[in-house]
Image (cartoon, rainbow, N blue to C red):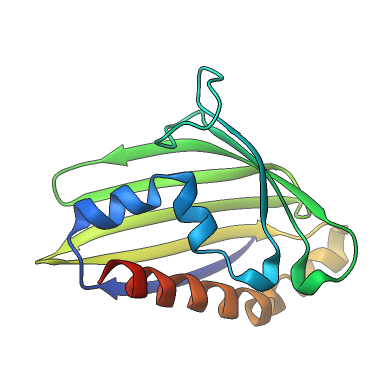
Length: 159
């Protein structure tokens, strides 16, 4: 399994950063335009459409078409874990349908005085057996611009 990690310090309180990331609108705001994201459907753990907060059991069905090239790629994620405490919070989403053989994204938030440390960790595996494993470490080239954008946008919107 390959792993990608990136962190940023956001000069905004944990509560504000956590609230922003807990909503589907946060996903839309943090996805670069060049991904051409379309949220097809979101539903809460009990099936209600468009939940305000993405709790454990919530599902997001989306599609992307990076740079407008090729067919749209479907992507379905489920929030599998969500925890929050006085000085930290986290949620983990698991891709249940999409272009990767495995995709597990852990979003961690830790209070740092009046600021928040945001840490993304993605465990992933490409399809294609041994070839997919071989190219896994090179995904950094694609992930880095996307997560750099996400972190820059988080700071821009919340600071």
